[in-house]
Image (cartoon, rainbow, N blue to C red; front, top):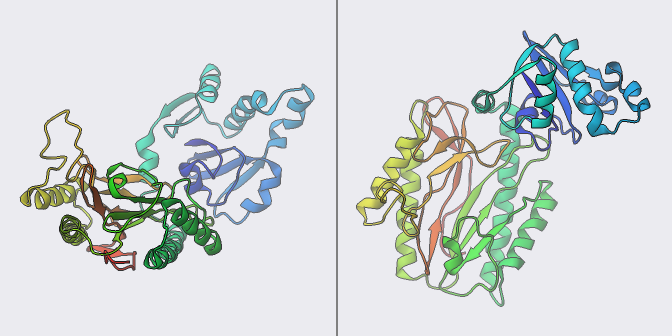
Length: 364
């Protein structure tokens, strides 16, 4: 196995080297031996990583390459090639996003590479204790941010999506988690538009969907949760959505256990919604873009990426103990809005444990 990248942007590398390293380096795993070929200033930080050897770039001839006047990007392929030769690597598997320029250089120098993304996806599905602890920390921060949004919603008076997004971001900072690029607080008809972050004023009698996914900086892992609120008396349609989505969430969590396919859990929720007259991905015509009803998958894995395996959709894989899943049924109508509820669960040997500890009330 070889991985090249930094542990901030590469989930595959962060899983193997659970330390935040912002500059790219090479990870080599061969015959049970694990080695990081890395900038020398990072070596003291990696000494505590179990069973990981380290080799500084200086040992690969960094100074010689600098003397030639090469830039970092010019010398990187040669450093990686020398590292592979030092580790006796003649062929290797890589993640699917291994740099193309680097792959071309290694192949031109007789090192065979095969991109095998599924291998790396599976390696990090079962969460380590450190990863699960990080997910729990991020989830608690998400709940504190949801508290702050609910409190401000109760106050009313000139609310906007932008104000609530900023409020959540400040809570994340105070809680010591990483503010995500998107903080979703959408209202009214906006709530039917995928990952629409939301903008403009929030009025009474319309849905307010709040979807929060901060990241724990220690583990690099995310949490993910969603709640739907309404200022004032909710319209009957929204109340009906909310009741049925809550039922779907309970049904899904009861069905999740090792050996069950994510696609089967998704199907059970679709059948519930279809039984009440709502279209789903399973009832739509092939090629149709569904805009109403339950138009997305039931959920996804969560960890070093906010969306990772296993899927809880039409192609959902078999669930295993140790998976962390975001379960997020929803119902929508274009032009009106929608309701989504999302809980985070960790799969146990005989079911799942719900990590989200938060009420579901429509009223803030």
